[in-house]
Each structure stands twice: as C-alpha cells, then as structure tokens.
Length: 154
Image 1 (spheres, rainbow, N blue to C red):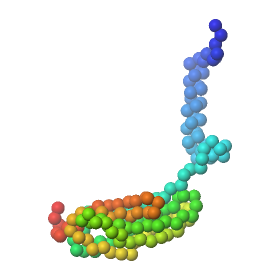
Image 2 (cartoon, helix red, strand yellow):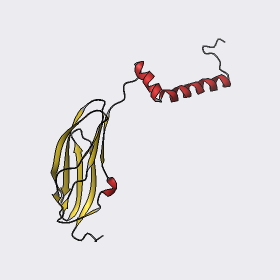
Image 3 (tube, one colour):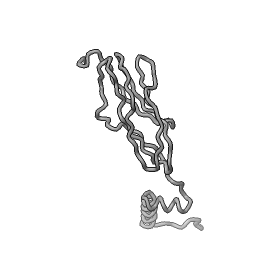
C-alpha cells in the first residue's frame, strides 16, 4: 500500500507542533507584527480614541439639590495615526429630560492628549441624574449621581 502522506514519528510531530506554536507566538510580538505588515499578510493596526474622566475617583455619588453641578474634566487622546478633529458635548439627563450643557471642538495630533474642563455649570434638580460626555464619533462616557435635598440622606 502506498502512502500519500509520510508517516511522522511522535517526536517529529511534537517538534512540528512546537515550531508552529513558537512561530505563532513570535508573530504576535511587535517585531513579528511588523514582519507580517511588511510582507502584506496583515494590515496596519487600527487607530482609536481614548476618552476618560480626568479624575474618576472624584466623581460624586450625591450632589446637593438646587446647587450647581460643575461637569467634571475629561481627557481625549488621539491614537488614530493622524491628526484628528474632535467635536465633544456634555449632556445632563434629569427627570427624564436631557439637555446639552457644554460643547466644543479640539484638534489633536497623533498621540496627543488634551484635558477639557467644560466651561459651564448646571442647576441640579432633586432626583437621579446622568452626565454624559459624547464625542461626534460615538465614543461616550457617563456617570450617575443623585441630587438630594438633604446631602446626608441615604
């Protein structure tokens, strides 16, 4: 009987499997990825935008009702591989109604971050609130708090 495929010994099979695993792991490194891109076997990595509150640990759980809520600072970082213009807005939702309380535009070079402190205050009505920061590209961050008549109630 003629074999179409050569018979591998268990040692040869293990060696071949080991080589495949090592090659796969090596191609996941920066140098391996670069080789794949240069060979036309992989595309360049996709760019992205980072959006985060500048001091998330300082976001309030409760805000005194009828006080002015100052929207927190947030950071945008451009990692798209090119200069990019960002349109941003801050929205406050309370009592089922949403309104824009701040907005603007900023142009960032690749790799450049910016921290924005919205130049506004919004009157806080009693009840739950949601404050969202929204970029024109659809990226968003938000936090929830309660506007309380008595800040000590709980």
